[in-house]
Length: 293
Image 1: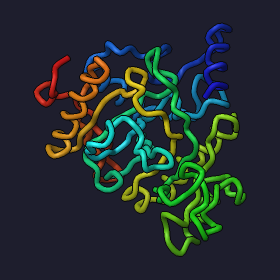
Image 2: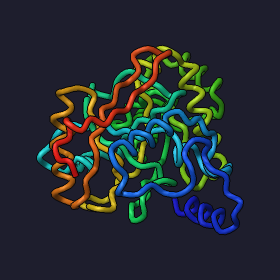
Image 3: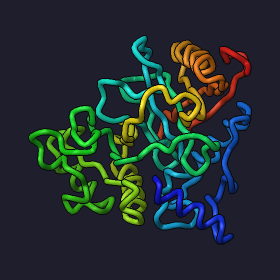
Image 4: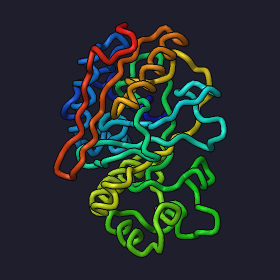
């Protein structure tokens, strides 16, 4: 995201930047409290920005919505490090116009990344590669999960197939004999500039148009793998849990992150919407925290 960060600096210097309509200007800080984080998450969840800082080259995922990664416990690596066996890293994007009622593999715990434009100073910028309006079974795809499912031509990148709009994606979805591995993902890499913003916006619209299937099957963002053991530079905003079973995992991860980095990150209870008309809820419950600070 080097181009995006250069753009951000230029906008700030010029004094012409306009910001996402709900969250204000500037970065968050690592000293933000649990209630602060809940406010940030709720604000971004409700923020349907179509671009960030009034820049057509800055997709909405840089400043709005919530980037969620569901995880399971492993003794082989820290939960915030990429799976060594994976070819990329999967997240889901949660916003009022990008809702779902469950996570992949029925995960009930995981972590949330700061959006790049609000991350505290000193955090690395994850490289966001592609967006699937519906889970793309990316573990079977090359190009860090963004490529074609082997043997299924219709699964290659959306834009490479002339699929550039939400309506075209829905037609592709409806024509697919099966889902997941047959579906395409929108390329949203930084070098596409305004093309990435348009592609992401169309992908979000497509998710809404697909309807019940998409609500029952979370979307998927693929990020490039980052190096392990990056410690204090990992842009974790919160650990989350959906229920009491997930809470145990979140408590372990909260302790582990503090031990490894010296940074306290809050545990947030996330309640996913159970109907398309309802909304996600973020809560900081002091009694659930494994450590208070």
